[in-house]
Length: 116
Length: 113
Image 1 (tube, rainbow over the protein chains, first blue to last red):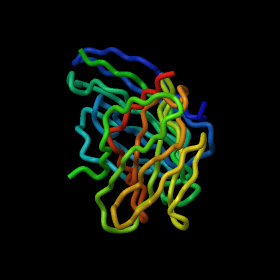
Image 2 (cartoon, rainbow over the protein chains, first blue to last red):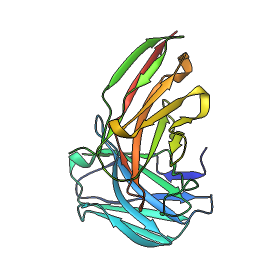
Image 3 (tube, one colour):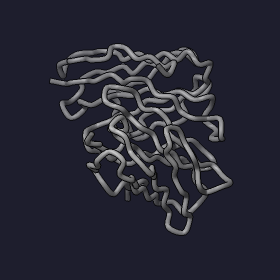
Image 4 (cartoon, one colour):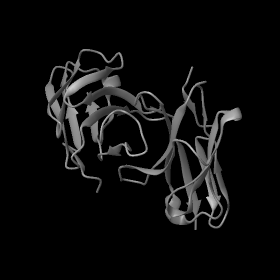
């Protein structure tokens, strides 16, 4: 248990559906991240929020829409996804985005997403 | 070009064998380096990290890694593996002035009892 929870753990959706992934951290951190983990590929950083402000968007398609209402919660809204978007979506948090010895990222268990 | 390369996709060892997993990064400036482990069905967790100072870093569970700047490498080592070390291992780097974390594709380690 890392203090970062994600719901749902598994999600199956059609290409026309709209769904949201939720991440919550109980660590008092100020930075939160979304990553995509596909089989046999490196983890891909998708979005970074620092103090509720988005600081990174690594060329992610607009069918993925993040929302960070406060430093403890992060959402990933999904709409009109493609089958190739099927992957494990990981959330992480750290004290802030400025890297230092104390800014280790803590990961949640992930949401396994399948797009039919 | 890939930012972090892990040379082995799958490594199979017997218990008590020594382990070395390769990791190379491609960036000429100052980097921070990490090894994460993902046990079956569990979340990613940090094994060890290098920010500065002694290039030989010791982590949890008997793991260590050595930063060799001239080789752009940060290989993970353990002198004697156990069955419980079966997991996927990810090398990662972030840049010194931001937290753009790049991961390698991972190395799956299977330790046979």
